[in-house]
Length: 443
Image 1: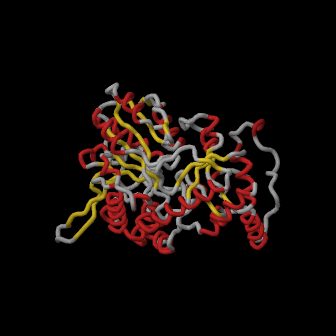
Image 2: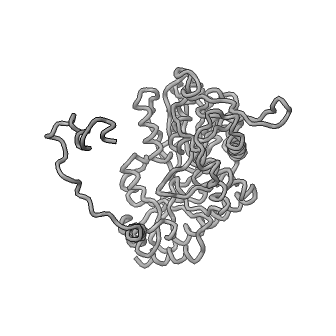
Image 3: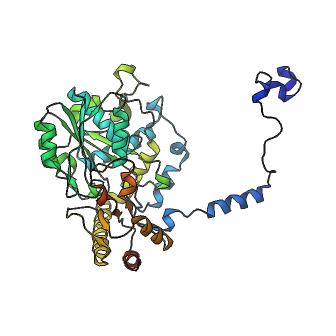
């Protein structure tokens, strides 16, 4: 090989690099290991990590410890799905197109919207794309975002806004863990707001008054973008019923593991009137020349498919494999199963909240309706409580102060310092919750 390229030794290949910056001598690497030795070392490293699934998790805030039926991994591990990338000749990939079509149909059923795309990168970027879409539809560029939206999602919105496409209006206040309706009305009175962006259940777990928020937005000529939890949509009225124009969210809870916080998938649905401004791809169902059912890529609005100036998004990752996992999950549990999972999670969350309040170590900062996430104020040092409970095998919720450091939540900092957001899924048992409450009470 060296003779073929005209050099005597491999070092001659680097003659163009000045000797002053060239590495002299060999790399400081350990000697090679046998396969048995390497396997042993890697297992030791893996064993030093304690996965969240081996602990009793009350973490939430967008990433949840729901049970994943075994059929999900079985289906998505099939080579025809697992190795597939974007179908550049889509009509050839009938299996992939069918799975996307079924995913879209399920998202529409959950959200009550007319049309869904083939998923987005994650919930945060789906939220931002909803705001950008609203700006295109309304021909406005200012966005009013509730401070009760997940702080990290707000941060993503501001990052996009820094590019100059959007302007973020002043945040309305938070009252009782919910968006202040009078403040929203005052902000919308300017008449130049493209979108009112809210989350329900919000970051603190509270259910927002979507009907009133939709009324205020529409009276001001703005669109309502709602971020929602797909599990709870199994029992809640869909956002479309309250007047939402765009519904987005994080779909990780639908059959995707927590996996260090990703990858997940962002779901995105809207009304048919706005479909041509929707980012991503839409798969449709039709018939071929022989009259047989067939699936086609009906709408593709990113710059890869159409002229760049006509593109609605440049996000290239639609996380189709994660969307397939969501489809398999929803098909496996079914409508009644999803409702059962949601009801069990809600009932257990209310049980744990009552148990924690009974310890005397927690107080309720406000009284609002919630799903399976809720916020309480801890009387002591939240970080110390988290460390102590981890030693006992519990992941004791999300510290609002930790998230506050990334982006303001609209709360008084003295209050935020003591707040913890707990999530309780169907996996949690009464003995686990009782043990957690007892351990907290003993601190």
